[in-house]
Length: 282
Image (tube, rainbow, N blue to C red; front, side, top):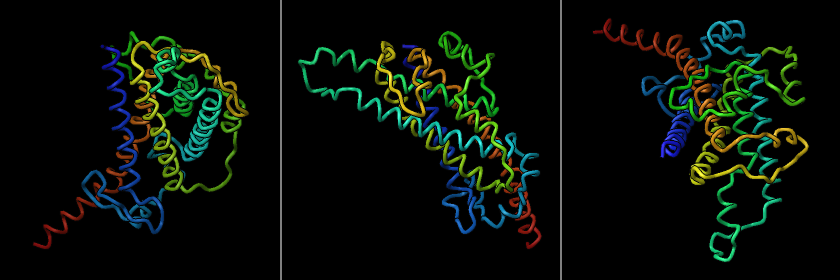
C-alpha cells in the first residue's frame, strides 16, 4: 500500500512538472514574432520585445542562470538522443514481443507478461537522471519516505562516476564556437524536457497499473544506438526512484531558476513601474 501511494505521488508530481514546463513555453515568447498564450504566473503578459530588452548575452545568461548556455545546448542534444534511443528500443521491443489479447482467457502467460516492466522503460528513467546529473541540473533531494525504496537506484546515481556511452561522451567534449541565442536555446531545452516528461508520464502510468508485484522483463532489445543502455539492471521500484529524482532535478535546476530569473529581472520591475505610473497619473 505504501509503495502504491508513493507511485501515485510520482505520477501526480510528473503531471505537475509537465504542466509547469508547458506553462513556461506558453507564457514566455522566446522567439521573435511569437505571442504569449497566457500570463506569466497569472501576473503579467510578457512581450518578446520586453524579453529581448534583457539583452541576455551568453555572459549575462551565465551570471543569471545556474546552467551555462553552452551546457544548455549540450543538454538539449543529450535529451534528444535519449528520446531517440527510447523510440528505437520501444520499436524493437514491440517487434520482439508477441501481441497478446487481454480478452483471451486461454493465454496462461498473459497474467505473468502483464506484470513485467520492459527493461527499456527502466533504461529511459535511469539515463534521464544520469544526463541531468552529468550537467549538474538541480539538486536531488530525498525524503525519509524514499530511503527504504532507493535500493539499487540510489547507489548508481550518487557517489559513483557516471558511465556514459561513447555518443554521450562526444557530446560532452563537443566544442561550441558559435554565438548562442540563449532564449532559443532554453526554449529548445524546455521542449525536450516536455517531450521527456510526456514519455515519463506515460511510462509511470503503465508502471502504476502493473502494481507492486511487477518484475523487470527478461526480454532485451538491442539497437545501433542503445545496446548498452538496454542491459541496465534493477527493479521496477528503481524506476520510480529514478524518475522521482529526475522530477526534482528539473524543478530545482530549470523551472525554478528560470521562473526566478524572469520574475526578478523582467516581470517584477515592469509591474512595479506600471504601478508607479498609475499612482503618478492619479
